Length: 118
Image (cartoon, rainbow, N blue to C red; front, top):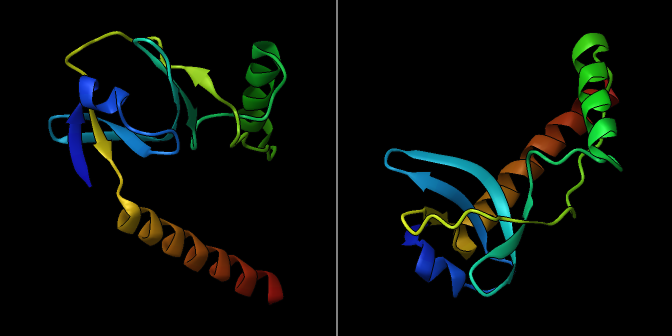
């Protein structure tokens, strides 16, 4: 993993896995989409709910909160970043980081499968 500034980040390729970085804090897990002139698109891997509107998004989360209803994530939803703060910093996951993350998730998935077989 490495830390880059906004200027460096804009030159990274589509498909780069990253988190926002503030001193002593790493937030979120995103995949960079296309770079625009002074912006970029991204997919948030941990916050996007599979919904067709902001109203449906809210209703899904309220139902989950009130009733424990399960809901699906939208892992292919892309939006525009839209923050033009040149002081922004980013934690960039390298190939090894992504492989370790995938391995960890696969290990967790195997645990789920063992529980389902009981």
